[in-house]
Amino acid sequence: MKAQFDLLDHVPLGVVVCDEELQAFFWNTCIEDWTGIRREEIVGKPVGSFFPRLNTERYRTRLKLLIEGGPPVIFSYQLNGCVFPHRDPKRIERIQHVTATNFLGKDGKRYILLAVEDRTEVSARIRAARQELAKRIETEAVLRKSVEEKENLMRELNHRVKNNLNMILSLINLQKDSAQEGPMREALDDLDGRIRSFSVLHEAMHKQDASAMIRIDEYLEKIIRELFESLKPPFSTAGLTMDIAQLELPFHTALYLGLIASESLTNAVKYGLGSYGDGTVSIKLAKTPSGGEMSITDNGPGFPQGFDPAGGESLGVKLIQLLTEELGGKARFESAPGARIVVTFNIDT
Image (cartoon, rainbow, N blue to C red; front, side, top):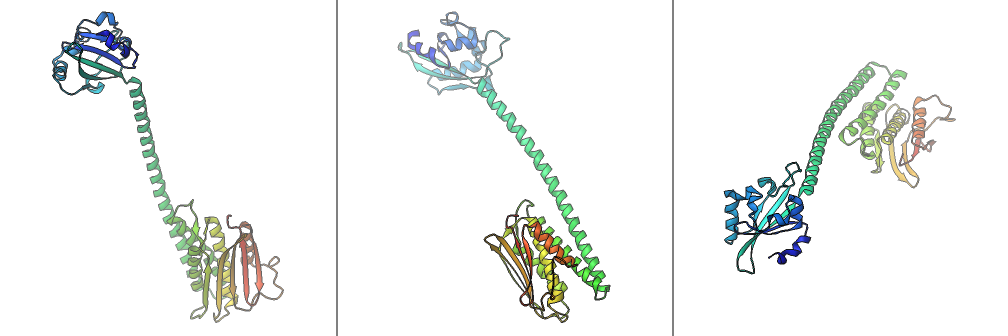
């Protein structure tokens, strides 16, 4: 019988062949190593005398059904533990998966073949992977909770900032209502436009990811329309035209352009529309080969003769120049006819 199974000494599985009474006929070298029981000790003897568990009714019944033509029987480690433990109880228990099948021998008798697969290392890797997965799930849960808390804090902060900006605008408008025409009223108009630019940009930032880009056309159109309506004289027939390209720009670039547009629009309404508020203000923004260009034009009298942007005392003009420099561009002040402010800027600033 042994000669039939010599080849099984070279497979990485423990192989046991026995008859229906569980008397061992073959015991390969692999199962020798895993159990510490030599082939000479066990062949020709009942396997149950070395491994008493196999003598129990549970195992006897299942193996009997197998001999009678039943399907293969599987003894998993999870349900059966180590079926073929090492004879030294101090040895670390191996994780084994045993499959029992039957076959017909040359002598016409039925035999049982027990294939023992050692899954200790595989189980260790699976266990380690599960532990790592559990840690990652736990870490992800902590991070999600942290992000959620930060988002809640940001929503609360944005809500408070928005309320504070609205309160400031309300106070400015109250002060404007009680201020007479003159330098004070003009200063309040300028301040209103600057804060409104911040308020609109803050609202846009609140609605989307702060790391993303912002649509400059939507942002500028909102600022310009609100500011124009608040600045033009009552019952004015003044018109406003806008031609703003649909560009996505970083938030800080959008903020600077918004402030420049506010200062330029304030100047156009003050001096270009006249006291009766008739005329038209045109605002354009387009992409150019070297970046972008924004222009604000009115059809009023234009800049005064001898106007020098570099040497003037106008805070608005100084702000436009300073903000344009921050964008890596240049500002031009033209009269052709009416006043025209042209700002070039880097598109990737």
